[in-house]
Image (cartoon, rainbow, N blue to C red; front, top):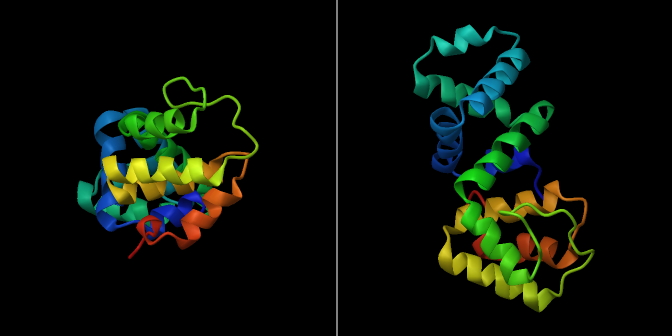
Length: 166
């Protein structure tokens, strides 16, 4: 199971760039909060980054966000990107498992999930959505929820379709 800062480090550079660019273009408060946290971690003022060309700034931000100390900031960035940009993926997964939700947000997850039902849900996601985004979502789902499903953990570790950085 990967934490959010590890996820950002293992995903393809293109997907990591997509996440930071999404925040820049679609969620200015999230972007500014992320930028401020990165600046603080590097003991710099945010204006230092704001004056850099965007590609250089984003590369520096992504490198810093892979640090364990920025786990909460990175988790918030990934969670927001998933909830807002890939809401269809979240709702497809939860619907296929028969879990009640409100636009991809769940109040109470079941303690366990039948392995075959989970496998069918993951197969459905992989058929409909980009495999790397599915892998990021499932890793984030497993890491960010209080309930851990052993069957999902096993799939994330053993299914080659769900491996990042390959």
